[in-house]
Image (cartoon, rainbow, N blue to C red; front, side, top):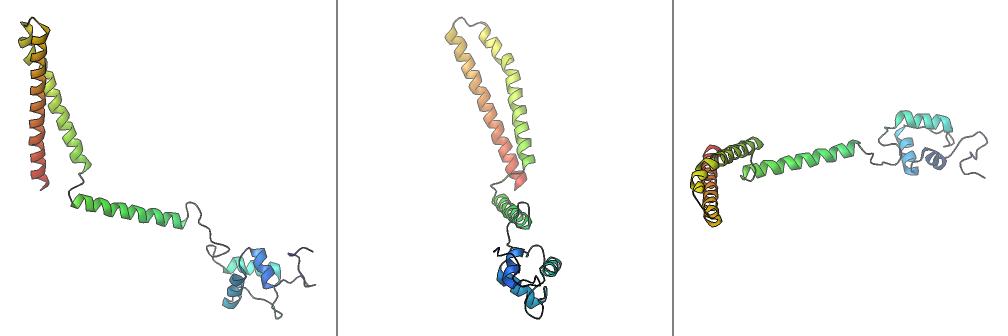
Length: 172
């Protein structure tokens, strides 16, 4: 005998059978009866169709059946929101502590660095060619180029230090 078949000759079912059909716990059906969301007849049995209609009509979907987190549902949205709020708080703290720079300031500094480096490298041949022109040996040319390269690096370093000081003054 199938357990989902009504045992009552009129087709009425018990609370336990209704819970199985609705795929919820028996206490959930009992709570629904106590709160008036579904009503049994005077014998405490249910018309299965009427009880299911009452259950669907009077029970919130988020409560009906076993709760399962659905991807993209409320719990996922809330978790994403909480994660975002935590990240924003961490970023504000890092910015307050001076450990975080605004992207526009970094972009400006990199553009400035690129312009300085480009200017130094564009003037490099004009500064070095006259010195190399009269040299006879590889070692002499190498020494001149190495010295000129070091000069470029020193000028770049000095320019970066100046920009860093300017940035500190403007940020402070």
